[in-house]
Length: 355
Image: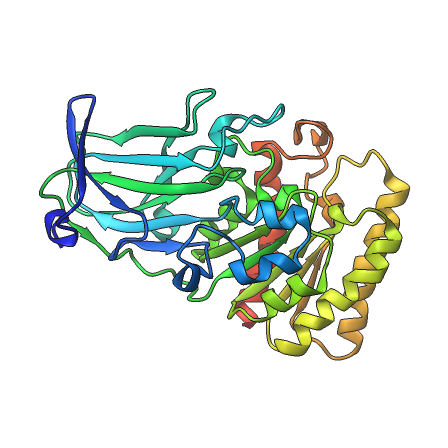
């Protein structure tokens, strides 16, 4: 379908001498992902808006951060651009704007998908418009644009060349989303750009849609959140909130009940249980935490559950150069996220094979 036929009222603009027509990211045949309640709420929020009053204050705010959000499409456009209005002017001491507020672009589908370019705001600005490609020839290709990890989005538009065609993207190999629930690490702190979050790495490797329920400092195994997750039709769940339990006692009080709430509603859902990844500055506490998560796994297996998997987070950063994997002894850099994806992939691949 030609761009002019999709929306008669599209907005036009010239960037660096390149004429472009802009469409909202939710415009068909483009495919919006990572916002499972979009069809009902029509806002870029990761949780149902109606559920926000029952969430903690932290989760209520972080739900509007767009980690895991993405838009996919096929196009023959010779130029591509984004025009983004963020919810706020963000600043993070240990994470660049390209990660917390930027958009990165991938070209191709399945195993052939590869990184192309990043757009990001100028310091102090909440709006930006950036050219991601120009002068591209060679016919239609799949395009994925990943939303910011640590900022909200009021508006997200994609720019195309005049007379270009836009069509639905190549379907994922895995039909239903993989949902990741966890901490600031799950949300993507401190990746240099959105696609380097371990959840996106795994989505690309497995050719699966993802939903990111990482809530920085605020994923604490609350039962209302378990109920929301249990209400979604998923291919697998990665449960990774160990880091946000304020202490071992909290993890003991919540971990098994959180898992069981989901399991009661979704008896066949593959679940991967992950303990916190660390360079391990507090090994004794980490060992106690690991035992709690392991107990959830062991008791599920003893009860006959064959769709539960365990990943020891201590192994995720590997044996060599562990101290090169984080920015602060906790939050992974890009190397750390690659190693996390490497460590979780076998269990998640096995889980998807069993689903």
